[in-house]
Image (cartoon, rainbow, N blue to C red; front, top):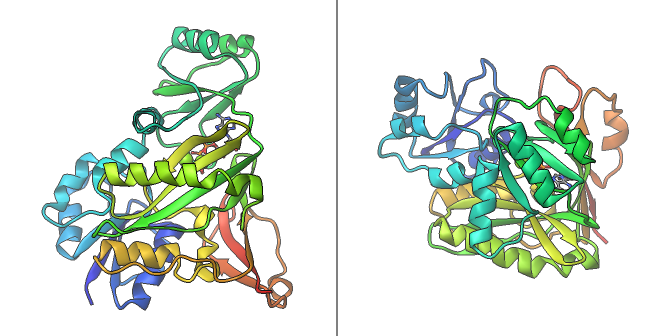
Length: 348
Ligand code: ATP
Ligand code: MG
Ligand code: MG
């Protein structure tokens, strides 16, 4: 079969590659790491820096289409892909990898993010705190994930005491929410959009711990508005593939948190819990194939992340017939590292 190129070598790439194999594709992973858990299940692996244009061009020559499992791939070097199509388009990556540009983009489409202001200096931060108020969160505009690169600002005095990192930052007002949820959609090359059920997401220490479907009724009520915005984002970007928007459910309706131009941790439940998984639909979309049914395949599904070096009794987990275990094959369990997940299906 044809080869799908995947930029990034982590668990999302691994799960895309596994879905691609089912459809007869081979995958070629491009990642800066020397070892890759996505490459372990793929046909080819290029370990090279993002700006190695020779390596990138050789990789592209092996690929019919290129996609990403990681939104922080620098966009400049992607010109070395030449005429090989990249889905989604790098402009989606460019917008989503900067919290300021994604919030502006979504606001322009009628979405509601938390109040925000760009911050480059301590004076900017003090101005932002004076305008937006506290509590709030200062975040790096780029490269953050799992809550890394974020500082809570409880009182205006906290801002003055901060030793600001020399990076572009953004200050956001703290949103009072009763739940978090995500909208995951897949848009085909023909413009067909399919939504997965929205999961209720629970974070612990800034890291996703749990996603469950169906979400509670007060969250489900906010899904239509959240989907409408996500569809506008997808259409504005002529997006092809899986796109995720994270939301806070508030008394005043859905507040946009951030977007990810890729498959998403809060969609891992779709592997067993939806008729077609987010990974398979992403592969179908980028390969120009018809999309699969996204409907829930169980009465309820709950996905729990396995984080860090906590010891687990795998036979005990597996002896419960409701459980499906996914281990990513990562060598070292560092604190906060996502090692796998367990999906629990309630069939009746
Ligand atoms: P991800 O791993 O999802 O990419 P991230 O590092 O990009 O995470 P965010 O999604 O911005 O981080 O924040 C992580 C979590 O912190 C959110 O899911 C939410 O629980 C909390 N949080 C972030 N921003 C706000 C806010 N403005 N108000 C209230 N809570 C927030
Ligand atoms: Mg993020
Ligand atoms: Mg997030």
